[in-house]
Image (cartoon, rainbow, N blue to C red; front, side, top):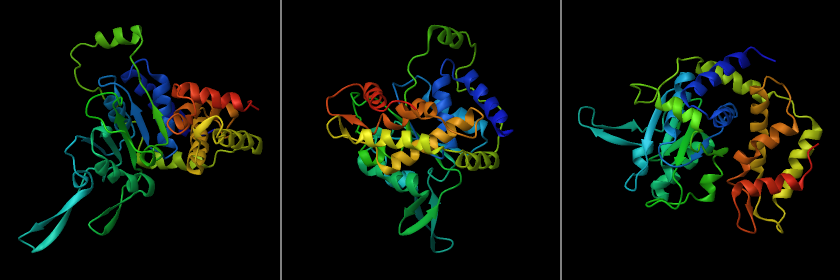
Length: 304
């Protein structure tokens, strides 16, 4: 389809050499970036969430900042503040870590809701309003947030408005035995290994534009729309997919097809990324595992 997919495949292969045994999570993370969305990774500490974020930024040569969210973190710690300078007699704005291309919001649900809300405008409108002034964020702007399980001490559940800003939510889980053995046999490597720079922000912008041009056949759109409508069946589900979620699902399907080297999407593209896009948005009437909820949604609409 395009020479860009060859470079993307090299990036994907490099990430797989760093985060061992997680090809599916890596594919979804790349899909989310190409779709110009934001990614939420929910899992236990120590399974590679930070490694994935850092390696992805390094491979794409993107500016990267990390913020450790804690119970005493303030919105100004994320957005930035104005400081009075005696020499000039004026206030000077000092940008916070949000003014970067890849922001890792580590353990985002350990911060209070007021601080979590500092991300809302940035994630949706790619700008930050600080002290009455609106400032544009860099392009691209990609938030990777990590979240600890809600049953852990000191966590605050993310509100639905915040969850809906994330195009995808994924889990990494423990590595399989073979991958973990390879990890244990890495001698002297106690930090986060980083790949070589294999792309540029300009190339990424070209890929994102190419994703927008991936064709969606009317029959595929019918399938997508039927899934969206089925998620709003109040007899089965308490919360369905919003119009924003539906548009995000289409973008993610296009990005998934682009990664496969195709200029058209199929129902299989939609089905494969649906758990990551819909799992944190759709809720069943009867409490059940989110994965089972998405399976039930897929069962409502036969594939075309």
